Amino acid sequence: MPQQDDFDRGLKNRRAVLGDAWVDKSLNNATAFNAEFQDLITRYAWHDIWGRPGLDPTTRRLLVLGMTMALARWEEFELHCKASIRGGVPIEKIKETLMQGAIYCGVPAANTAFKIATDILREEGMLPAKQPLSPLTRVATHHTFSEPQLKVAVQGHGPAVVLSHALGLNLQMWDGLAADLAVTHEVARYDHRGHGGSAVPPGPYAMDELVDDAARLIREWGRGPVVFVGLSMGGMVGQGLAIRHPDLLRGLVLANTTSQYPDAAQSMWSQRIAAVESGGMEAIADAVMERYFNAAFRASHEHIVERFRSTLLRCDPSGYVACCHAAAHVDWLERLSTIRCPTLIIAGALDVGAPLVMSQEIAERIRGSTLVVFDEASHLSVAEQPALFSQAVREFLAALPLA
Image (cartoon, rainbow, N blue to C red; front, side, top):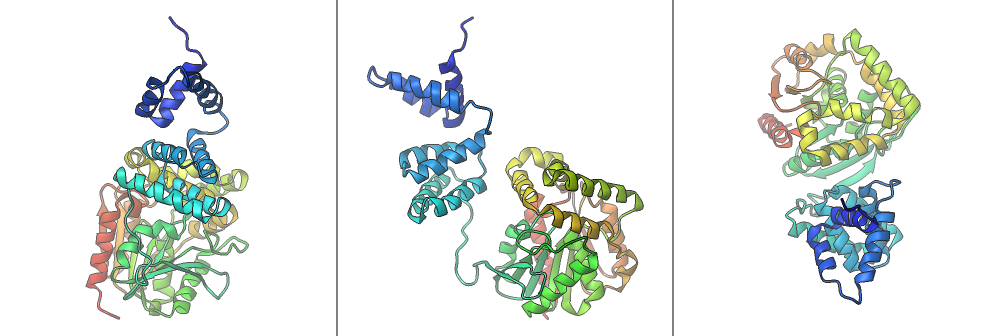
């Protein structure tokens, strides 16, 4: 049996990164003039460097994009950019690499890099949807004047809607829905205290504090009463708003949430808090993704799961723990009957974080509420079933009387 040498090992890496067609073209067209050079880069670049265990292949791909961008090696940049896109590197990571390059390589280099990458995405049929920066579609970012300051993003024109995200994520969780609703509504979404671009005051936090944050945001915005859409922890906040600040709401959407945890769940919260305090966000990332997304979705949408996992890892551990205390002790169940605004409740049949029975308990207590169940959704139903989620919310909004 012939044994592999370093050329064979390097060739395997080279094919994995650049694809067979490109590698075959390079090797088959080698001449007596450049064959030794092809042998050299295959052994040393593609085996000795690309074969090193210190960095994962995606990180190495992104580093090459940044380096070729900095050196204006556009032929090499295009080759590796195309290979990265075809190789499954998330578009979001490529974008962030080019954004970083805009600072360290210069705007002209970033402009060229974005143009090349955009052309490749178009050729591959992967170009994201248009996002014009016209006044009605541009996303404007602000912070509240009151403290603790909350980061807010506003877009669109029409009746007011506020979106409130899940524990450990940020306002980008709503990117797709916000764009859909902004066609007919003015949409504000915000980062909870302890999350994203909002302030991280010392914890632990109480649910009433998170509710009061949302109330002062709506009052500062001056567009109330609003329709409030909350998912998971955001849904807990929405219930509190409807109970404690009913004048601020004309409609309420509660998705994948609960009004009260059973006593048995307290040990889960204690374990999660302890894990983050000792090991940071990495200690819980995989377990949280398993709760947020069902197994079939995780297997078929790895890039989406990875994007949410990255967001979770960027969450401030102290802010996350402080909000865990608030969520763990949510207790609206016996006061839900006081809610009078029109209410839509969305649940996922596969949700283990907020099982269907929790949504049913809410629906039974809010007079006139509507419960919608997505059969193929787990906890982050807005990410797993974006079209169904958007349709349900838009139909709910269309049925509301104007303020």
